[in-house]
Image (cartoon, rainbow, N blue to C red; front, side, top):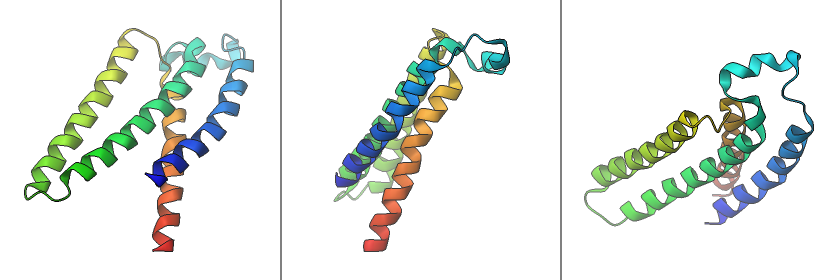
Length: 130
């Protein structure tokens, strides 16, 4: 779980300034009209936060799935089932938020990407130590 704590800490350190910067932008400017096809530009800030939360939840779900399969004979079946369940829940949440028009996909992608980058970074550091 040390990996998750490090990823969460680093994500918060990067997401907070990103959210503050997104609050300073006037998303209704004509020069930012390219964002409209990706969802309501007014929801970029909340989408960044939701992306980070979903990324961290996905990471915790992945770790939970791997930990629960250790020590079982049917590890492959259980891992596939838990992975598909986790992805289904992730997609369901995103689809519901999109149907309610409460997210901007670029903001969501930005938040999830921050988590992914720090996961790769910390994973590589752990692999080098071992």
